[in-house]
Amino acid sequence: MCACVSRCEGDTSAIDEEPASQAPDGHAANTLQTPEENTRLPQEIEHPRESETFSADDNHLHSEVEDLKKRCLDVEAENVFLRTQNCSYMQEIESLKERCTNIEAENIFPRSENDRLRTEVETLRKRCPDFVSIKFENAFLRSERDKLQSQLQQKRVFRFGEISEADSLVSHFSGLPNKETFFELLRMFHDFDIVYSKKWKVQRLDKETQLLITLMRLRRGLSHRDLAVRFKVSETTITKVVASWIMALHHILVKNLMRTVPSTKKNQIDLPECFKEYPRTRMIIDCTEVFTGNPTLIMNQNKIYSNYKHRITSKALVGIAPNGTVTFVSKLYAGSTSDRKVVIDCGVLNCLVPGDSLMADKGFNIEDLLPDGVVLNIPPFKMNPQFTEEEEEVDLTTSIAQARIHVERAIARIKNFQILQFIPASLCHYSSEVFQVCAALTNFQRPLIRAKTAGVVSYNEAKVSSDH
Image (tube, rainbow, N blue to C red; front, top):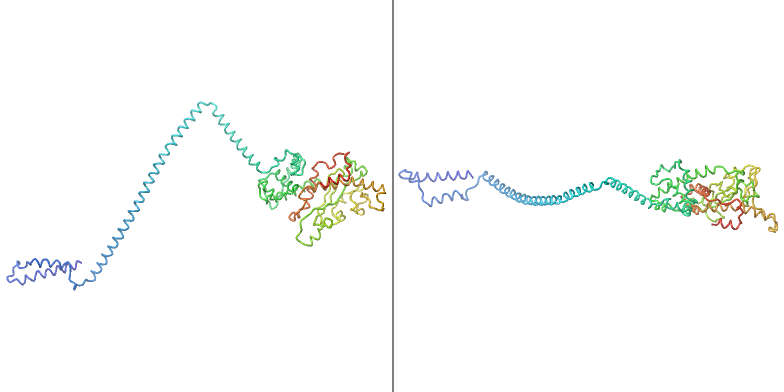
C-alpha cells in the first residue's frame, strides 16, 4: 500500500513537472492546474486504474489484514461469552451473600436462647441445694433404664428362665423333672470343655442355653431351623451345639456314670417287692427298635430291615436294675440282628459274675452263653397242651412278668424322647450316642418304681404305662 502511494506521488511529480517544461517563459507560476485537474488527481490516487496490478507484497498484506479482522471478530465473540459468564458468577455471589446473611440472622436467636437457658440453670442451681444428688439420681435411673431395656431384649430370645418356674414346662421341653435337676446336670459341665467340630466357637450362647437347646432337640425332636428361630442364631450354630453337647453328655453320663453295673448287693438295698422271689437279680434286659432313615446303599438297607417291624430300624439292648434305674445300654445294631447276636456282641455278659441272676423275655435263648454260676430267669415255654392247668408254671410266668415288665416301662421312658421316633440319615453316624444319652437322661427323672412296697404292678397296668 505504501508502494502504491509512493508511485502515485511519483506520478504526481511527473504531472507537475510536465507543464513546467512546457511553459514558454519557464516561470513557476505556469505549474498551477485547473480545478478539474485537481479533482481528478486524488481520484486516480485513491482508485487506481484496472490495468494496474498489485505486486506480491500487496497480496500478502491483504491476507494479513483479513486474518486480523477474523481474529478481532473471534476476540469480540469471546469477550461477549466471558461477559455473560461473569454476570452469572456475580449472580451466584450475590445469592451466596444473601444466604450467609440469613444464616447469621438465624444464629443470633439460638445464641441468645442458649445464654438464657444457661442463666436459668445457674439460677436453679442456686435455688436447689440438692442439685448434685438429683444429678446422681438421674444417672442411676438412666442406668436402670438401660438395664431393663437389655433384659427386655434378652426376653425376646427363648431362655430357660421362661420355663424354670413351672415343673411341667421343664419336663415338657427338657425331659427333666424340675429346674433343680437341670442345674444339677449343668454343674457337671462346669469345668468341662465343650469341643466343637472344626474349632467352632459359640459366643452368643452360654452353657445353660446350649444345654437347653440340646435337651429340647432330644426331648421334643425340634428341627434345627425351629431352634434357630427360637434362640436367634443360625442353623449351623444349632447343628454344632447339638452335636458337640450330645458327645459331651455321652462322655459324662454314659462313659463315666454308667461305666459299671451296680452289684447284686447294692441292688438288694432297695429291692422292690416284686423281686423278693429273685433277690440275686443283677439286671433285667430287653431289646427295642427305633425307626431310622434309609441308607444310600441297597445292601445296607437289606441289613437293617426289620421283619418284626416291617420297616428299616435299628436295635439296642437295654438293661435296668431291679429298682428301675437304667444301668446298661448297648449301641445300635441293624434291625435284622437277632437278640442272641446282640447279647453276644454288646458286652453285657461281661458285667455278670457268679451268683448273679439275669432276667429276660423268653425270646432270649442265651442260657448257654452265660458265665458259670449265672442264672437266667425267663418265662417258661409251653410244654403241655393244657398250659393253664400247670399252676407252678402259671405262677412262675406271672411273677417273672410282674418283675420283667419294668424294663418295658423303662424303654417307654426312653422312647418318650421324640428324637427317637425317627432318626434321620443325617444323624446315623452318631445315632448310638443319641440313644444312649436319652437312656441315661431317664435316670434323672422320678423313680420308675415309686416305693419299696409298691413294686408289684399288674401286667395290664404296666403295659398301659409302657404304651404311654
